[in-house]
Image (tube, rainbow, N blue to C red; front, side, top):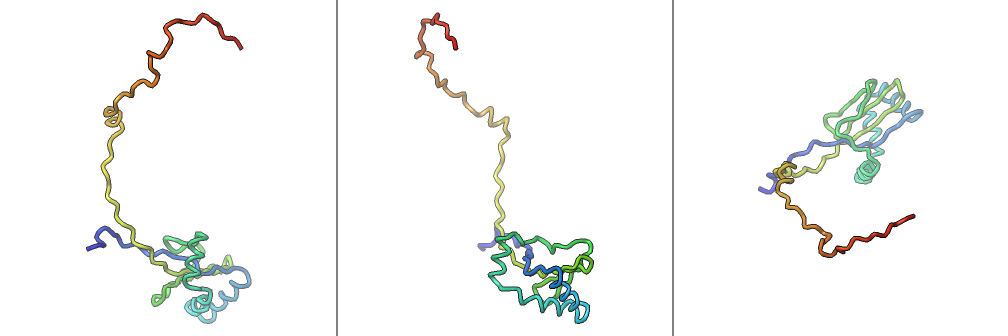
Length: 145
């Protein structure tokens, strides 16, 4: 009844952690030795719940889809809200978490009036400078600077 005007929103993705350099190499080794799911489970320790969400929202680390480049591998664990992206070539790993976006109301469209119609409907404004307040005598004085 009340949700007729709401559309369901697609979940967005927030960044939980991004590692590069030596920290990323350790996780990349975990991927090679134990698999991507083990790496996801390891990286979950950096997820602090609402604090992570707030930090991502404040810092702009919220995405409509999983951010990935051409060399990135993307691993999603079907049973969890997490996704792992990594690139061995560039030496980084990133853990993202689904963030359910709030449904947005469907806004009713209002009819737009064409600008030509607006121009025709306007009434000419009264002259703000009254002609009766002007002096009828013309001054013959010259003004110089």
